[in-house]
Length: 388
Ligand code: NZQ
Ligand code: ZN
Image (tube, rainbow, N blue to C red; front, side, top):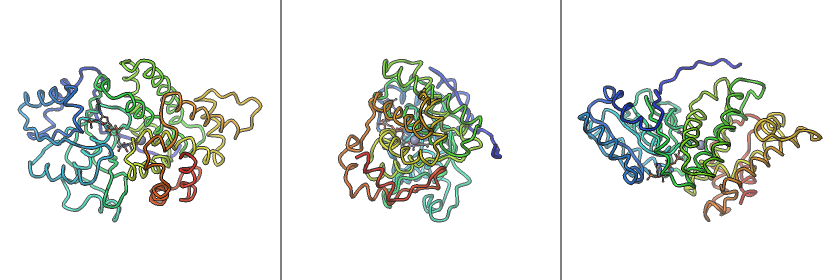
């Protein structure tokens, strides 16, 4: 195994109706003034806003309202939140919403403590914040796993880059699966596939030899497939939503990454697609993954063949390793179709299929050295052409 150090900073409160008990326990850590950060208003419509403001008010907290966080949250919104936090002497940020709300809040928490510009500090000088306001997270849609990590994916519109910032890691998170029951079906499937993508992007990293992280990863992937199917059959299935909620945290809380170098080239491409087209994250991933993996499989056929046999039950009899690998990718593509996710860029919206946009996407991706093969910009453009 590769060497690693491991500790976990996020306390988890999981389960139906757990928010009151969780917030009550965490109240002493929240100071006097709590910024309540949320998205476009779903929490006002489904009652979560009233429930949480009620608990905070009973405990005597001053609430600073920071709503309107958009999907693919912008850096301008981060700056707006940081200014509001400073002006109101906010002690704690409670992020209630999806990955967008939680990511924006984590970046606000870091920017609020900095005199310099967070983006420039990280992207120009490769320095990272060491101090942030404390953050608590209450995910209301599961999928990103943002509630258990320190990454914040933010769209900087001035430079047309959607990229990760290293920001605050939530000190606690409340995971109530019943909150996710009001998420629109299309978004719920997309978010669940995001978790599956996190598993794959980690699994296809290195080392690709036997390791316990990949064995756990396979268990999570099986669970996600099973429970997406259950959710498709019955969108109100609480058990399925609860399994998917913990899968989501497990896929992106770092445990599957122990001892591994991850790949995440699909995410890098999708993030830029999101920067130019504002597409839904999980849907963009669903379109790109099979095509990307047909390009990557020849560089790591054994691992893709293991994915085929262990995850999709492909029978290797009479096939060479690459054939098994490609059959597994076909099974992945078939699953994406089966659960109703888009399979072409065209289905994401018209701008996504425009060649000029796709060239810009390919030319601006922050492609890290991939684990089995690093793509160049022309190959990324080629992949995007293949899924038009
Ligand atoms: O904004 P509101 O009104 O709350 O509506 C949201 C939004 O329209 C809605 N929603 C959330 N909870 C709901 C609900 N609607 C009804 N009932 C509820 N209980 O769902 C819509 C999508 O929300 P959003 O937060 O945008 O979705 P998601 O959780 O998929 O987050 C996507 C963002 O997270 C980033 C993505 O790039 C994208 O920007 N990611 C963050 C990661 C991380 N920090 O670890 C990892 C991921 O790979 C990902 O990149
Ligand atoms: Zn993702």
